[in-house]
Length: 594
Image (cartoon, rainbow, N blue to C red):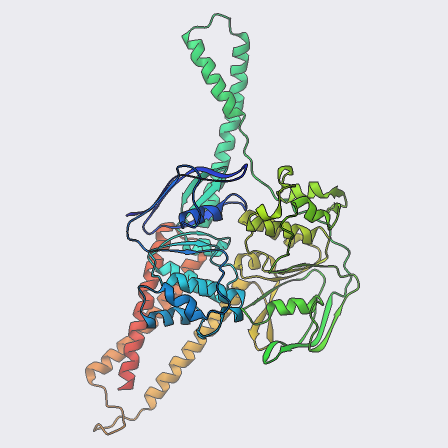
């Protein structure tokens, strides 16, 4: 395999704050790598250095293989609001024919290419950025949070696309299902060092735990041995020979190792929620329209104490509008919404909060409260509460503009929870948060005594927390599905399978009704030759076998229980099966159109 990228002694600092120092990294052709690290450790900065957007400090070098095409997907993408989708995408398509551009835009559901950027949702803008990347036909893709703001259908399309393509990837993402199904290598950035694991995310978790346990055992062993050596040092005579000198040197090396600490930053979400009565939010025939757009149509539901609801649907169907309705920040155009007297909302909005960039971290939280009540009823100063959210004392007086995107989102989450809400409304809470924060937030929400309503495109997050789903289907239609998101996807796949089976049966029934004629006549199908009839029968058998194999491969790829080698083999085979299905279905249509 050719080496696509070599990174030598790359460093980055912002003032006195060192993000990483003398990083070395090699990426080979075919590697699909996820970079994992807590917020604020420099993941985005490293990707921007690799993409040539930022420079490394000192003598660091970044070398790409000559003549390969590299595409970079930034975390946030800013375009001229008056430009159309086509005007943004087309300049990137140096090696792409016009029909190929149209196919890429169609797959990303960007069919109205004359729409202006100012008319698009955040998810649609992200799809435009992905289209700009795809039309370059890159061999190496560097992506910062590719799934942020995307709807679940698009995320699953990307999963399938990257699983089948032979491209090389380096990305930062918090989407753990995406990591499991796409990546074959995980690189963890910890304490300025890179640790590499050949395997998917599940394999990484297992091996990382082994590494941490081995480090702890080595330190414990060194400490036990140190006690023996310390006793020898105290009893040793003043006259010291060569052997004694060697043992003394070893003693100091041992002392250094025994003094090591394994620092694992632990987020601590331990916030008291206010008492919640039986009445939460009662919706009666609620509707909301804006010109010709319908966000909610005749919605009736009484939210119950303690229930945890996930909200899913494509971009632009009204999920955020719905949250604004039930929190009272938007009035319905029809129907009625009643909010219980004991309800105290904690509303984490998708767009976040507009902090004053000149404020320090401590100033921002003191505007809300000086003390915070914890789950056990105790009150602590906000300085202590900041420590729980991984803002140590040396960061309290840092200006907010110096924080990373993930640190700003974590600070925003802190400001929502410190008000002790009993009904949490979370609109895309996983965007920009690191996996460590997500794991702790998930555990907190599972135990949260109040009610939780979550809009999220993070399937792992939804599976872990919610009891049922509100599925937004468009045109104001909201359906209640009892079960996890994975249960819902299986339900949808089964419905699609049944639809295909019914369609195939309908076509076969029509074929059987066709009356054969002895002589070809104008405007009538000619009779198939014996050879063509046999070919048609074989194709129908092949389609059934290939369809079953595709289903089995999809189950294997999504199961997360196969080895890395089997994962790669299955990814290659499913691409071959899909290509064969397309080819045979096309030939089936040709034979039936004769």
